[in-house]
Length: 307
Ligand SMILES: [Zn+2]
Image 1 (cartoon, rainbow, N blue to C red):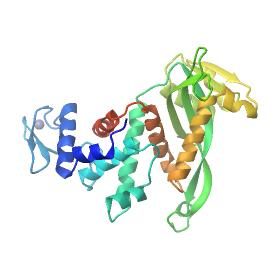
Image 2 (cartoon, protein in one colour):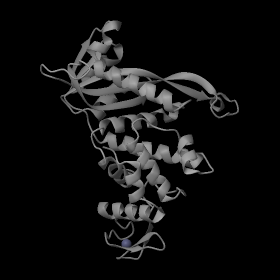
Image 3 (cartoon, rainbow, N blue to C red):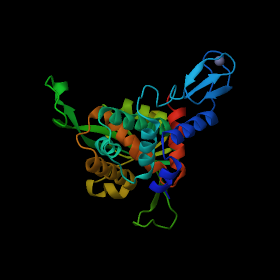
Image 4 (tube, rainbow, N blue to C red):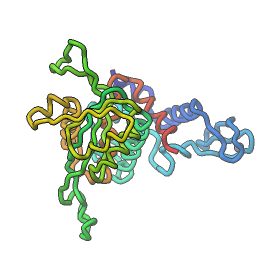
């Protein structure tokens, strides 16, 4: 179960309760003074700052976290983290701006993108293992008019396709089948936007995101030929078009679910931000059994993953 809205409101009813929680989160992780290296700090409640007990240097509560540089109240961040970790699909910055009753779009949009960046950084720590289905997908994005030397009009731009490499841990089940009749069980997933599908790009992704010795299943595309240079067991297969959902089942389910979600919620995605939306999709998918703990996890990552 996810934390529901009423629980969230009763735990974090106002700015002060959010500040206290954020302060406690930082204290749990530990604060180190950048001047003298001391780990002991006094809390200055009125100033919303820590003061180093060693040298007296002050550190604002936002400093060194995802909130650094943001002028939005803590409660906005808490609402955003709550919604990002409790909604099954997603929501647009415009929707959140309306719900918060905030007068400007840009800061809300930036806040959500920073949170999605953190989700990506958190998932980057995990390397896929055992059997991995690998394929690429083409996601619809837009090129803003300004990139073509024309003045920018919000929401206007020409469509193009962005290339995404998708990796899914997919373990065979002995004898049993999942609900949808699949012979495999899905673990963690990753989606990585790339400029092109050349072997060097694919190899770099595989070396960074997979544990050595993993088994990789792909089709027989040219992009995957150089995988043999790596410490993985590559199993390319000639896959007829009509068999693709059968032979690499989970990677195609993941691609089509992500495409549908992006299309439903976000319109006119710019190529530079596609990775962030995919980060959110993968982060939620990878933690689909975390339940209420997910809020705290993302809050912690807002402190630990931002430097
Ligand atoms: Zn100090």
